[in-house]
Length: 404
Image 1: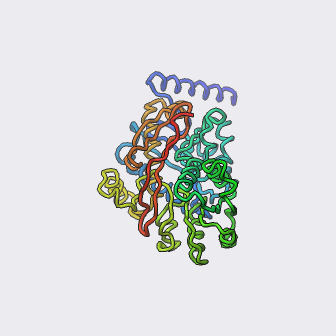
Image 2: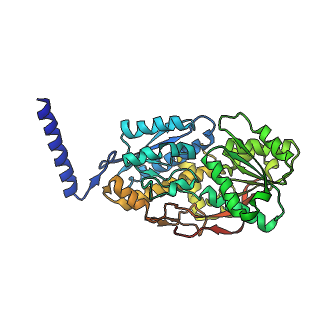
Image 3: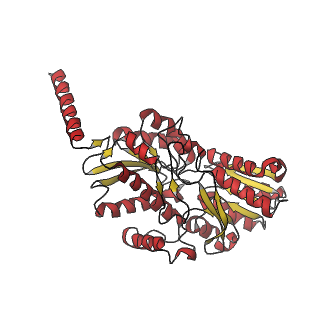
């Protein structure tokens, strides 16, 4: 009897597949005529909780989209799992999303080490790991990991951009680096070294790392100051970026300071540190930073403000991290629209690798562009300097070649 039931179920499954094919529709797990189920891991708690605004902004965008009819008539159901910014928890939560929740794809997972911890699993299961929230170049390795794709500029690009600027404007700088002791921080060091070339050994005079579990980085900042460095590079996440800026000021050190875009947030970093302490800090941007008055007459900015007012009123309208979630949600929707009614996991990866779009809240001239041989959607950035209120653009666009 059990065997007959199994056979019947198999037959019904084949009939359903045939019907779907006949109607021109093909669906993968988590997809139906009315829904696309998407998973996300994010630090709603823990040391990376500043990044919890990413899923909040994305959820609000999908809520707006669903009210408007969804994507080709299907509503996006975003299931968010709190991983506390802990890679072991990311593994557990990702397995739950894939195996228990049966999501179509995992989107905008937060964190470099966290996402690397599940990359092999995602690729073995052939589940799309879409637009990882990390600047690690590891997520552009389309040959070995064809089911994983990044989104923002790599930390290598940003580190190289800072090094190039330092060489041009302060060629005798004595550089100290504070970095997170994982792939994020280590890649940043490699970017600095690449940009400085044969002068890296003499110009980088001191490095200090920190762990995500460290309560403070005060001792590291003191050690970096003691080295005699006059230039400080911060490869930090928001919590430690704020601590570093505050501690540098408190001990009376006044280095030229460069800070990763991972921490370039007015509300999550500069305000907690004390905005007066951060004046002059240089970072990089590729989103239209809502704190910068440059964009306040821009249509993309005005549309974003209207979206925030209606769908995410509790969110900060000067926090670029809320723009990140918005832009990345818009990117996913673009991919899903390109898929049409062929919503299989294989097709979503094909479409993710054929993007060419200018998003309204990405800096003009920076396109989200991919190809089957380039899994780095954004490969340009601009430098920006904090003036006590906002990060203001300066200098030329920094880009890398379109194809590797």
